[in-house]
Length: 120
Image (cartoon, rainbow, N blue to C red; front, side, top):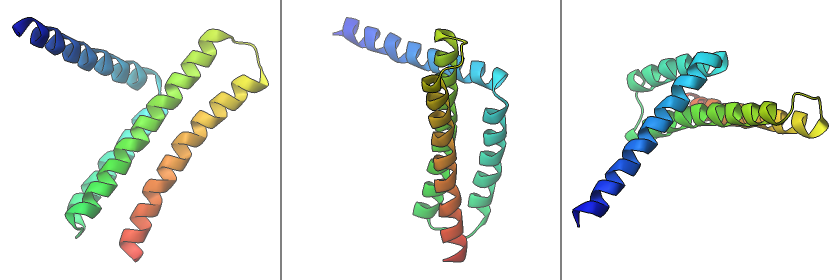
């Protein structure tokens, strides 16, 4: 009984460690991740000061985290494409552009949520 629990604990621990290593690696090399983190700190601060319902506040905070997740996914796509080949290729450009669009659309969703909450 304890052996499966210990194995599961080790798996969860490894997942946390690998995720943290991914964050640190992206933080060190991706200025855009650092910029989006600053935007999220400011957005979260505003969400805690402005009179919002708990659900509205949760929406803003969750969308902010999704922007960071999208930026990490974009970084992963760019790294994988660059690892495969440094040659210019239309499919590589499309993959990178789609990753960038992923971040942009997610950020747009966060911006729309703020506008609707503040104006509506």
